[in-house]
Amino acid sequence: MAAFTITPVEVGIMRCRHTAEFSHEDVRALARFLEDYRGKLLVDLRETTGEQCARNLKQFRPMMPTTAVFGAELDPEIFNISESYYTHDVKYFASEEEALAWLRNQE
Image 1 (tube, one colour):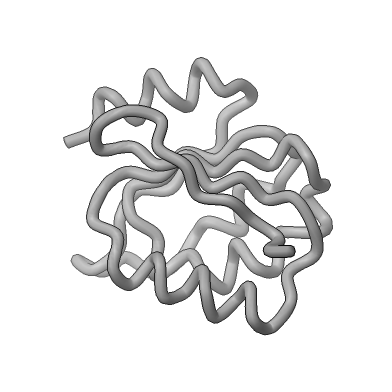
Image 2 (image 1 turned 180 degrees about the horizontal axis):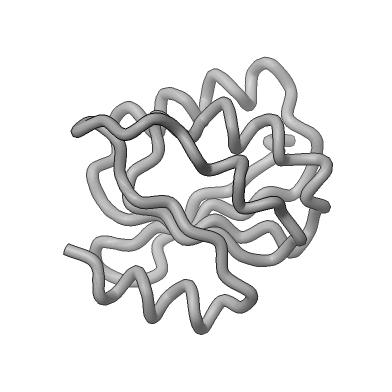
């Protein structure tokens, strides 16, 4: 069973729900998805803890499209990387409603 699921939220926004510890296969599968995906991403961490996914979020950060993260307590510093025209905004929100509102206003 995969440690995450990808489902549509609305046109242009996909939800990535983290549900378990990432295996090496999960890391590769998510990396392939992020390489190909061109929309916005809503990362739902309600079924996990910030400790479980902080390392993976930091690893995937350079590959992420415009992304809103919610659902687990995280140190927002994990999303800081050196500025590059290749990177997109990734922000942490306290609720799904806030995260979706922000994503809908991004171009």
